[in-house]
Amino acid sequence: QVQLVESGGGLVQAGGSLRLSCAASGSIFSINDMNWYRQAPGKQRELVAIISSGGNTNYLDSVKGRFTISRDNAKNMVYLQMTSLKPEDTAVYYCNAVVPQLLGYEREYWGQGTQVTVSS
Figure 1 (cartoon, rainbow, N blue to C red):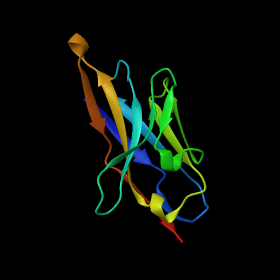
Figure 2: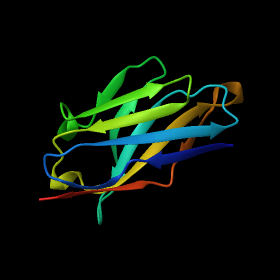
Figure 3: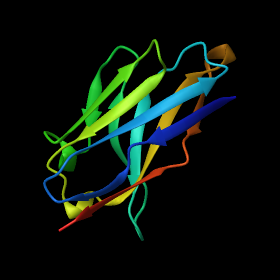
Figure 4: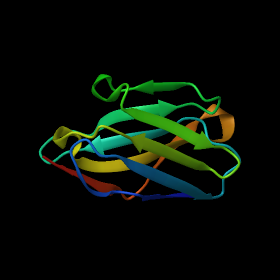
């Protein structure tokens, strides 16, 4: 089993910054993609940023240039640096890890989420 614990959420004014962290622990040999998702009230969960084990990244169009995802493979950590925050960034942010299993399968794990609220 793998456990993911997010931290770093909070209340910030528009234009401000926050840094989210996610620590993975448990029976981990390696982690493939590590991702950040978010879900705003009344909306579907959406993929915000992806980072592969090799460091390749991709972002939701609306956060490009403002958010930066990074990871520390030695510590099994993933981060999301968020700058120039907007009220529409308000959501619960979830960490997601894709862990390889036997026979080439993968399994996804989720954190409990951390609230980010951006006031106007």
